[in-house]
Length: 338
Image 1 (spheres, helix red, strand yellow):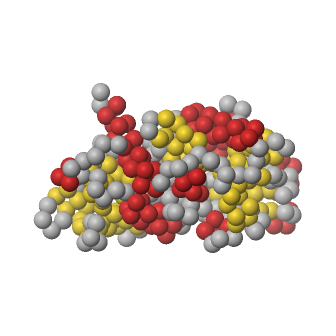
Image 2 (tube, one colour; image 1 turned 135 degrees about the vertical axis):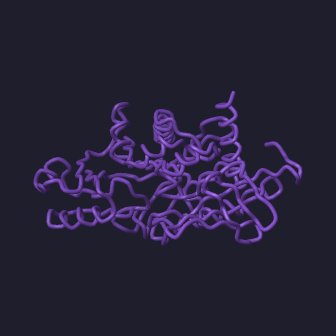
């Protein structure tokens, strides 16, 4: 990685927060990125997006103003134009293509995948539709839109019991319920509709749950060591993810053959969806076959989060992981401008 003199630091705006229920988790991810990026190479700014507006802080914690028309940052003494945006927003607007579309319009480089890929992967139903075309094994699913007539018997005849009811566009397991008897289904549907206008009801897969990061690193697509997830709860829900009610074992206790199967599937998905930057895919291995659940393109980036744990197991520290993401974003723009 190129070193820069103190006068040539690249200016990075780290976007965090957002409008979803994952706001507080995103603030933690963004702070870890802010703390980890090498201060000898980068001049860093935190940009916190919330329902109340945008706030910006420099490295000393001093408040700055940010001009949304071109992202110029105004301090007491000067105006600074970022070289790149590091997106650490989970959910809306950082993981669903909204922020990416805006950054494309003002021609600002950013980490991660593009606007279309972000919008596609944030929509569970559409992602599954695209991946089924290339024979990626998935659970049987049933889609409901708000206002649809709901026939519980029809749904259960397709997906069976137990099943999962989940919001189509949401992360961190918000709006997800496990249904073990018909009497619970209506309430689970209402819970998911509280979060989204479209919901997905999926058959329950039984087996080993694993998560695998795939990243673009130093110009290559790299599958990271796999994490096995063992939860004390009914499934890998919010409490399991963030309140310690699960075990995450990296590398996963699966055979070399299964490891290769999961890696190959995860890379196939990454390539087919034209992703870049970070991704984390979830699978359940049932009867020796990894079944795809979902993919995150702005996964948790705290030290305890799964993708940083996997990078660490691969010998990649947070400073290298995040610095590489910035350099990949800047290189992508150079290629486009050739």
